[in-house]
Length: 337
Image (cartoon, rainbow, N blue to C red):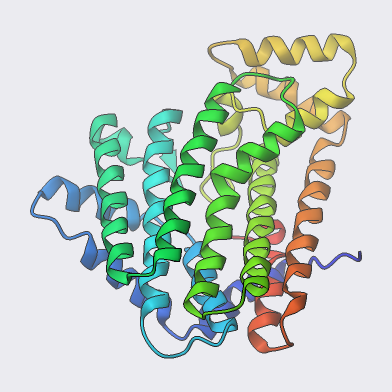
């Protein structure tokens, strides 16, 4: 299988091409979300507005509508409504994530829990999920309701599994893939399959779009985990070393542990067992990452999932929609925003 990863310019272009292809639909989704989150409780409105306006690529919403367009859906607003549902699930999980991780910064801005506290953030996250489920019921499609309900369950299971393995420098790569498959890739997969459901595609094409989304999500998360060790500067508003300081063992660390000698493995185990890690610890770990070329190996793993995602759409006839969605796979590795 040959490499399909485009240059950075092409990767970002694919993202913008998808937005353009959908001709203002993403703006409609944003308006719908704001409408659905209206509340008589001032704090809910204030927190949800702050969180939803703090940035984000809305890639999952775009996947839902892009998949629907690939499937031939053209009349109606179901793709926009369900894209909003997918985004609300994502936003709710981010609110909960920040509480679990005790995060103070996301996308270069203070997190809602840093401003309003953990209790309010958890409750507003629950509010977003409840509004999402109301919208799914209004849509009336049982297949979509089952799909997004089970996806919410998978995300929660992924969070618990990650928490269970926190601080384990000897985490198996297999378990890491399971965690990100539940936490991240499950929603990417559901977003694409929802678009297929809206289009009333047959099972093979639904499965193909689900595979496309799942593998895109895996590549996206692996690349994101590599960026945590990628530079001494902030990238995309993400603090370098954030995962490290939180004790999350991700693929770069797993690869180092696989290649390290006994002394280095013991060092890594002790570092991640600590309640707190400091900048000196990070510098020492970065030296090991560089020594074993763990970032190159991490991006190579991500590239594998990019290729699988790209090939999953082979079942569809050639079209502008197919080309843009396939080109989008490189965005996970080469994005610059």
